[in-house]
Image 1 (tube, rainbow, N blue to C red):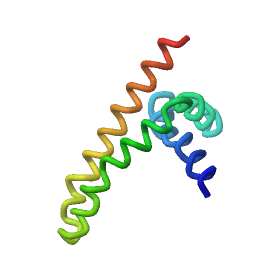
Image 2 (tube, helix red, strand yellow):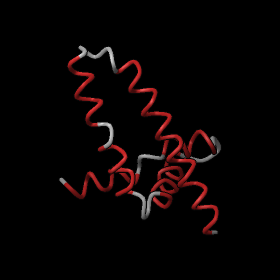
Image 3 (cartoon, helix red, strand yellow):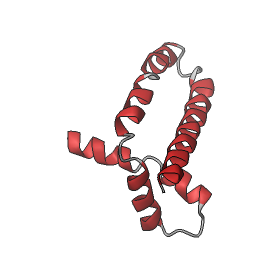
Image 4 (cartoon, one colour):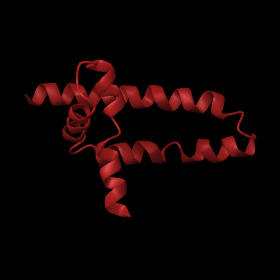
Length: 92
C-alpha cells in the first residue's frame, strides 16, 4: 500500500504539466511529473499534512468550509508546482 501512495505522489503534478505543455501526450506528462517530483515527494506529503486540521474542521461545518479550503489547497499546489518547476529548470 505504501509503495502505491509513493507512486501516486509522483503523478501529482501531471495536471499542471499538461496545462503548461498542452502539446504533450498524457504519458509524456506523467513521465515529466515523475521526474519533477523526484526528491520532493516528502515535501508534498508534509504539505498535505498541513491541511488535515482544516479538513477536520470542514467536516464539523458540514462541508461549508470546503468552499474556501479547496481553492486554497489548489493554489498552494500550483505554487508548489511552480517551485518544483523552477528547481527542475535550474538543474538543467
